[in-house]
Image 1 (tube, helix red, strand yellow):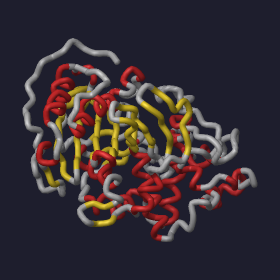
Image 2 (cartoon, rainbow, N blue to C red; image 1 turned 60 degrees about the vertical axis):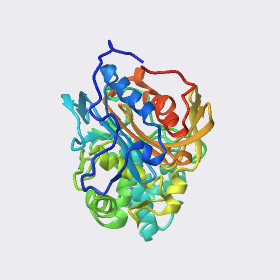
Image 3 (cartoon, rainbow, N blue to C red; image 1 turned 90 degrees about the vertical axis):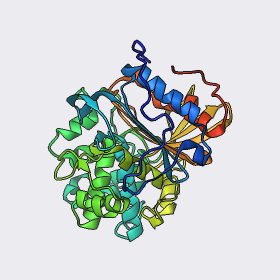
Image 4 (cartoon, rainbow, N blue to C red; image 1 turned 120 degrees about the horizontal axis):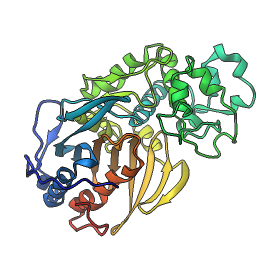
Length: 381
């Protein structure tokens, strides 16, 4: 990863006790919940020392309390539009990019529990009768469950840069008919047999939510998810046939994104209210398929319901870390063994040199803060 010349800056909040501001978050100092503050202080110093990392916010929850919250300045985008240099704070909305997919999956779970979606094994073409020409026997084998696990078997290429019009998500967005674009892709694999990253499937899931609830998608998301979490500042960009960009278009404030992550540590509950069914949280973060090239120096990676399932190799053994991940190094890490949720927002869009940077934050600073030992993975700064 590329580093700038180090820049020394003092931390404005040396004990990392977040402010209580009436947004639903209980707060505490790290020591109050058994975290060593020293590795967290080193994390803050490292991010400030290397501004080319372009990290914008890092938040840590433990045991239902926000215990670390730091903001930084850096270059940012709004769904591909350059914003220039932004000084971030808790009121600044940020692109979530593909973390948006995990939010869409949560909404599918809520609708399923309501009975408005009868089964995940229903053919996805059944929700789109106007595309009857695509309801072939082969396509009727593709179900909602396959869409959730990105195993529909459709030809789809998002390995090209998102600046390339041949990237299928970009082509879908500009096609004028996103639903047909996705449904009409060539079938190249048996549904359910293998994983292939496909944001178009997430767009179909959002359309299924809208059609099943008979409500505009944004309205349903607000009433079923955001309002119960106390989230009242939501921007969901894009217009794909009356739907927002379900694969990448959501923008939230950092504390609000951390609330969403908290649901996945606490069985779908927020402040004693069940928002997402506990069974859905468990199923979403269960290993369904291995991703392509699933092994790295950090561990192994699988896929659930629009969640990445990381198994981190550490000096303390293998640590499970279900992850919501987005372009630019947007991350929510859920670490059940350590009772942690870690939220990272950054501006390294379309930058492969930044790959793995937030994960290194876990290994070098945050897990050691929880486990009381120095990391064995080296240091970032």
